[in-house]
Length: 193
Length: 321
Image (cartoon, rainbow over all chains, first blue to last red; front, side):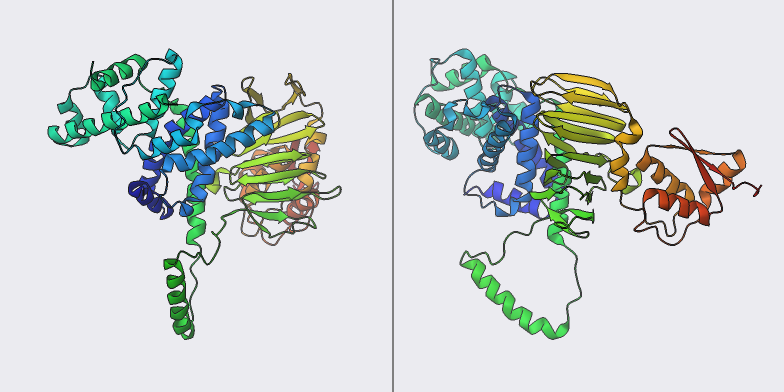
């Protein structure tokens, strides 16, 4: 059960403005990248599809039960919106084979609960690896992707991450450890396909 | 190399996730927020006085619903938000009909339809047209022609826009009046006021006031001035919902009339320009045509008019100086 997402959905249904900002700012970038990869990198198409997706989703937010993460739930709407868009435009965009579409992988990304012990490999092409890394980051629980990017891409010290998040250095280190484990799980699951 | 080092290397190698352009995010956020507010407002609904004698019965019903919910049963379908109201109806969709998402709008030959969206936009369908109301800000044109007139600034709808989806792309309003028509396999966009943007795979195209854009079946775009503006906008005036004039001023009425007809209003002299706009109107023009409404309102205001091209001149009747 995705309690945090469920709570956010309830706040949205109640009309809380801050909840809307949190929902949009958290979900839009990941959903946009999700659509972009399936629409031949057509940004205009992705914008239209994601807007349709989010409009449908906010109208049905009362039906969200927290059984999947909010992002996974939105991706379900988004797949339909992409299919409808491609049909309307006479495109074949929805048929792009993407490895994370495999149901087992989606399930693995969804749970991210146990260590797989699989070291990330470099067997795939650089571009595809980058895309998959970003897919895994988008699917991680809240804050995990941010702390990983801050630490390993921006080179931010743990004490600065702690300050930014209002945590103690020890709590920030613990968060980073959990983020690494979650990332390793997600990426291992993708590479196992 | 341990796994943590590998993760660090992998992240460094691939770099940060690509950022979404802020302009796109802001545009989508504004549109989705508007839909979300409309949905939550509709769910809240109007509160009505509740007769005390039904209180006991209500308590029993509430208890029954609570038990049913605990058992996982949902007694009522999710309420659908009202997105638009029919102002000028057809046999299939009479005036006053409230529309929610996915409503199919259809007119036969001889019918026309005018809607008012929750945002204040006026949307009109020409005869023999089909469209779908996707959401409060999106319509999909399936056949015939659709006309959109932006909400007046007083409607408090700033920031909201209406998109029309077509096979050639999405026509995005930028505070304007425009028509989109499907002609066989082509799409024509005509702009009366302001500007629209057609978003499509081959890249966006912008169309300004007084011009029309024709997108052929192969996606080829051809832009030109509208040859006969008066004829082009005639049908939209014939299906214009009448303004409620009671308590409004002559100036407000003439502004509205000018927008509907695409005319510039001019007063015959400075004295008239200073005094006439403030004349307070009463009564109703419901059921009249635009021309009848103009004649009626000017008559009760003691004025007359003369049409010179696209300028409507407001004058005192001869002999009334």
